[in-house]
Image 1 (tube, rainbow, N blue to C red):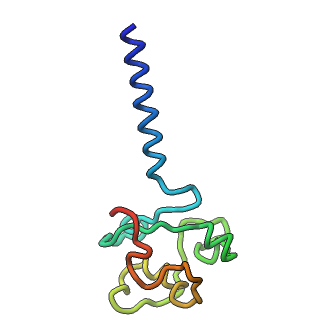
Image 2: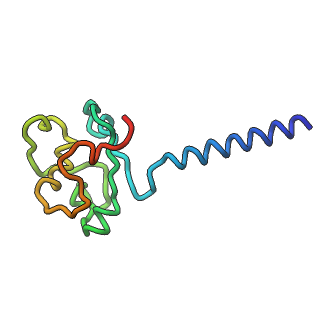
Length: 121
């Protein structure tokens, strides 16, 4: 009987841990960009949550607008030159290639670090 009770408690605890972890994960249509791993730069700011749905569905971009192939491979294409403090950070070069040139809807982040950098370090 004690084994059954312990098994039931362990099952409840495991289920609770899974539910808690899922609540703290970004939605499936978003991708967390880990600056340190993705572009091998020192992450001095919080992480960025990139929303593929906005860029693909709402802005009608294609995978190859950012990726080197239509299949959306992990290689990213840079098409711009960032000067000043951001010059050595390819993550900024990737984002600002478009965000510095295109007209922005009202909800698009401006040039304030905390508008994009919202995830824990």
